[in-house]
Image (cartoon, rainbow, N blue to C red; front, side, top):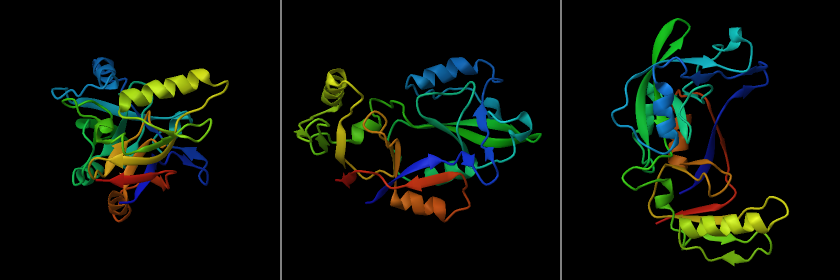
Length: 231
């Protein structure tokens, strides 16, 4: 299965505008819950989060110039891996195999004096011991030493982090493990590689086509620089 990197479209040079991002600073006790999410916790009994609003570093009159199915965050928000998504996008994502460690939180978005149904899509948490990294078979993946291009023998995430830290400490300038191939234990359509390489969020070609064939707006896709194989 082929995979692609997926990003939020946030800059619009033709219009000379930037996208407004979701701010949750008006939500009662929001920061307490957002901090817990940022530490990787899934909060199944979280309250209904109302109201988010759009904000950017542009002038306030342009904060709401564009609404799309996917926004990032600004101000007070859940860190650690999350998107702000429309109900339509949530419905589409639920039809695909998302790597464990995700949850959807219902919210309301105040946009041009209307209340719209939007969701916090948390995708980098730990769920009953499962996370995105649980799907990576490190023993079958291929990693290279950035100094000599030799293959590195890595059995698990702990070994990966140990070797990565040593490479960083021994380098006079920033270096990182070279990822040549990632072996997944099963077919997944949405997975994050934060901490493994710079690619970030990876989706299957199947999910990419579903997004492109829908009316969902706000994404950019690009090729990845390593191979992905599935079991």
